Length: 400
Ligand SMILES: Cc1ncc(COP(=O)(O)O)c(C=O)c1O
Image 1 (tube, rainbow, N blue to C red):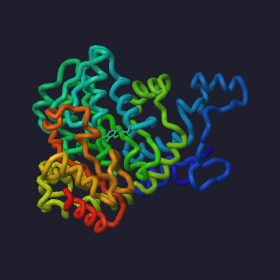
Image 2 (image 1 turned 180 degrees about the vertical axis):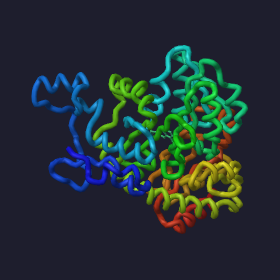
Image 3 (image 1 turned 135 degrees about the vertical axis):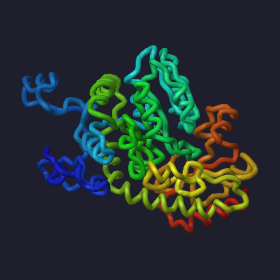
Image 4 (image 1 turned 60 degrees about the vertical axis):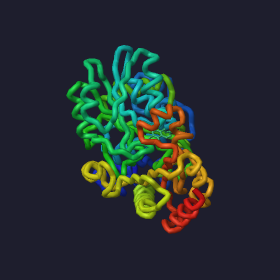
């Protein structure tokens, strides 16, 4: 295996170029498209070589739970895109989130997180950690004073997502990073909704970034994956050994699919963001919509912050259909082009009713506190023509 001619110097290129070339390793066959190393293990020329690999005295692959050339290409491409020193790929977004949060902690530590989290992330912070004697405090992520007040001497990590799922609030990453650092804690950011194209949390002061690669990075609804990006020290000290021994590793096949997804990520995210903006514009004044939230609009509650920390809005739009759950369901059932799903970031437009799916685990009061009403709908813009999407949404709203 050799590095491609371009890959030595790819970090200096712009994101679009890095998405196509970073991390490429070429085998002796000189393939254009990255090879899929669908292998569990590796063979050695001698017992001495095998011993040297295990002792870490000779570079090379040992077992695909630890490392694999196709996964290494995916990790390298993500690192260069994100501007991170190191990365580890995981089987799913939740494997990445759980590992990034849990692996560095021990009994007696404390975590502060924003309340507005994807349901499974909130489960990890709220239910799982306390079972192992790791306390957690949930705060209103928009309220910096709440973050400040929640910090304790034993606070080790802060965790947030921005824009939030599904209400698309935008949290002040530099300010929260500063609060965390002053308390001696790290900030972990789930950057799924922003995508690496529109927001770079490490450059905003965060210490760790996690992705569900299942979403925009694949972008075609094919496979699951996740990735943790951080400093070399954080990955070496906390993540590498945990993943090696406990095994939430990515499949080489999925790494290969995701590498191909990365090649078109910038083009897709831009087109999907344009579609989301068109849909938001078309729905904002619709008489059957009581509230619309889109991070690219001037009427977004944190519009100034969006301009400061994001390069553009989002591929997602949130809105409240008047008439609660019955009206929202009539609307969803009336759609012919956009499909009902709990997923997002796909080439196909997808529509979700969070109260009965991604956030059904929460009590109605907890949902209300987050602004997830019974009529709230999350729209993930795909790559269809915006006019077709808008016509479909309007037709369905007539039935709501
Ligand atoms: C914000 C966010 N974080 C994490 C995840 C988990 O990712 P995965 O489904 O790949 O485990 C999801 C979606 O499922 C998500 O929307």
